[in-house]
Length: 186
Image (cartoon, rainbow, N blue to C red; front, side, top):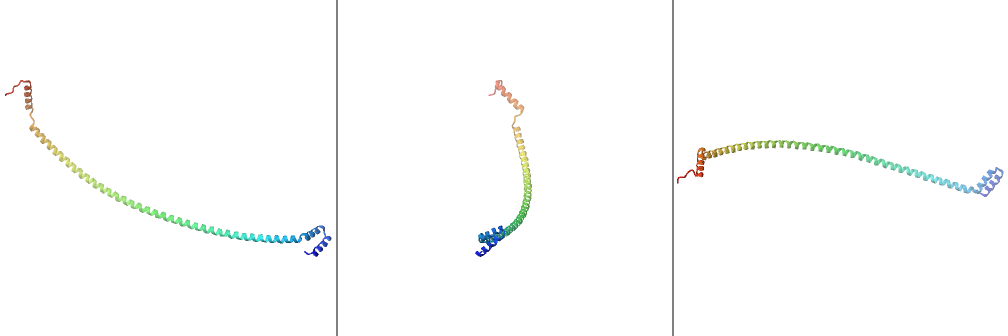
């Protein structure tokens, strides 16, 4: 404000109300500074609003970017989970099929082993029966030979044995000779 304006405002201030006069004086004394401060405050507020808007926009963009990233990662994790479940299900089915195949093979092997064992058991029973018959025959033959040998030896002993009466006479003679009751012919 120029000096003339200030004087004009002062002269008009005398005519009016005292409060208006104080306001006019204040305007004259501090008006330029206040307008400068107001302009600075407006500019500062405008800068703060612009920075705030820029920050809000930047933050919004970053949040949207982060949300998109999180959504994308969640979708990938979901797909991985679905794939992992599918693979596990396939592996479980494969393992089940393999176990069924192993069970079938085991049962076949067990069946063959049972058949083989039964065949071998029959063969062993047959061999044992043959051997037992052979042993029975050998035992009968040995018994018959033993009986015939005993009979022969008994007959030989019978032939060689001294009769009772002969033995009694012999023993009597020995007794008499020992007692010297019997003389021997010379």
